[in-house]
Amino acid sequence: MHEAIIHVHKAGPLLALVGNPNCGKTALFNRLTGSHQKVANYAGVTVERKEGRLISAAGKVLRLLDLPGTYSLHARSPDERVTCDVLAGQARGEKRPDLVICVLDATNLRRNLRLLLAVKRLGLPCVAVLNMNDLAAKRGLKIDPAALSEALGVPVVATVATHGEGVDELKTLLDRTDIWQAAQPGATPEHSPEVDHAVVRDILQTLGLDSQLPDLPGDKADRVLLHPVAGPLILTLVLFLLFQAVFSWAETPMNMIESGIAWLSGHVGQLLPAGHLQSLITDGVLAGAGGVLVFLPQILILFFFILILEESGYLPRAAFLLDRLMGGVGLSGRSFIPLLSSFACAIPGIMATRSIANPRDRLVTILIAPLMTCSARLPVYALLIGAFIPQREVWGGLELQGLVLFGLYLAGIVGAMAVAWCAKKFSTGRQVRPLMMELPSYHWPSPRNVLIGLQQRATIFIKRVGGIILSLTIILWFLSTFPAPPPGATGSPIEYSFAGTLGRGLAMIFEPIGFNWQISLALVPGLAAREVVISALGTVYALSASGTDAAQALSPIIAQTWSLPTALSLLAWFVFAPQCMATLAAARRETGGLRWPLVMAAYLFGLAYLASFITYRVAGWLLV
Image (tube, rainbow, N blue to C red; front, side):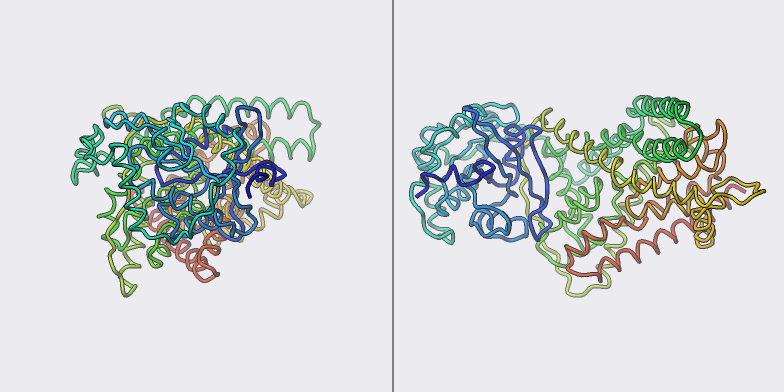
């Protein structure tokens, strides 16, 4: 029946990685595929699809699909539905896998084995990977892979994915032709849970694994880290130190990138004859896209810490700690992970809300996700803080710039909680649901997984610089260059261009909050991507300057031309700034219409304008 299954797919046989959340499935996927990965979305849904290329021990090229984690084949959320549909061969545009690799957490076989039994009943060829054996050994668990294989009726390979142990054995196993044949097409997936429970109990008894487990060192750590008083204080300290590092660690590489761009701009300007081409390259491309690229070190440092916290098992505990706080505003701790994802980008944060079963909680989480300070806002914050906040230590080695950055992130969080609280007050039928989630074991982060995550983030950022940011920068250069100033004009050429006219028109709207026409103009391309504001300001000010002034970095220029109330007003604007078009599109896909994305855009614009107005007026009054 399955003898020729290995030749079904032209691009190579398709393997599917299946497992419970936090079983080490992603670590195994990274170990098997390395950098040969591509990420997209499944057809018709916003669930992420991650596929990689795996080469077996004999050199056979295989396709490996990392399916969303699930506890069973009874789907309760969109991501679990994708896993069920792919395994059943019902996913649109997706082939049914030729082989399933079921990843088991060796420290929690009782729960993991139920999923493997359900996969077996689908009639697909299956192998089991007994992962996290090092953690199991620390708990005094001795699991015999051969005995487990005999009990399950499928091949079993013991691994420690974070260290690469057992990976070669798995690649060798995939070359065996017998594993690609399903033993027997089993019963339906809707098998009796009581029967599965009895089967799992018998397997554990046979292996001598049905006794009570001793406490782990991590259990002792949780008594401190999850303490109702000490836990939140430690979490606050961790996040605080994270933002300190974003500035202190990034200073040297940022200076190197800035110097390199200035050197390149100067040499290109000398090589090209004066004219529109020279202006396009130096004032448009290099001043715009280069002005954004300089913030890559800060973004990578931010994601480095997020990946460390995620890999170590601390993030689910942060969700647990914040459950009580979020319950006070009508949400649960389950909203924490999507909101945390929004610190990277609101789009994956909005997509991650699919794991929230309650429709009301899911909608509110989508609406407040853009208030989390995404990485696209970090360049704006860094530019303004670097230009207007002095670099000095205030107490115990803490830097003032890092304190201000922490305050901006905190302001976004407070704003999100306030909006959620208002939604709680104006909604009816609110029922508080207790948070039930698994707390994974603590373990050292895998350097390999962290490096792969940083590589993916750097690639995404550089593609944005070379794609949408570069395109918008060139368009803005064109609008800022044409038409040419009339004869006898005394101002800078940009003042007579299309962009100058548009900027002066917008300035009438934004003048009450302290924005000049250059800022007002830069906000327009910022609707496509927030960090484009930096490239837009770089282009506008480069074209507004003349002679050697055009080669200056953007930070000293705005420090000389903007007032402090204007800078503080712009910071307040970006705490609540209306999100980019891509975020609105993601919200439209998740909510199924235009109603809620329009509500989102309207209330965020109102909050941003109000916050900037108050900040500008109060700062101006205090500095008189």
